[in-house]
Image (cartoon, rainbow, N blue to C red):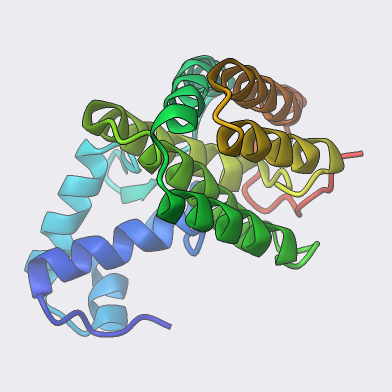
Length: 227
């Protein structure tokens, strides 16, 4: 359930952005100004402004004469996204291995524990917690430029994850999360870089297999657990 924002303009934007990134709005789902106005209990002006911002950020896309919908990602864009993510995540892990603090270490451990405790059949919750773990990893690198780049990339990854509904607790990727964390905590930058890059390649393979099979073309496709 949405709560009425206290700061109308930024609040509406933040509510809608979070809802999209959390998968509350499905890929290709249309967002109507009237429906959102009623749902949030605000005027149409902040709704319209939020939609404009989210479209500029690439989370929504216009439909000629029919408003906007949650953006659908092509297989080519997904491939490009994971190519870049492999490099950035590897860099984040290697820097985190050298720069992380005790607080960072505790937050990384907690994020991974929460991800592992997520329900096996709840891909949305797994996605939210997986993104949190990777965000904590980037924050532990203590590099502001990297954080800025990662924020935009995280949006793309979130769209792809909700579109393909690939579970984040696949046994292979789960083991790789532990390998990344172990290398970071051991302050081994090369091992951390390699572990993070391998993890992205593995998950990208699961995602691309889904996209290239055409399963994500139908937004009503039910979640399928990777074999």
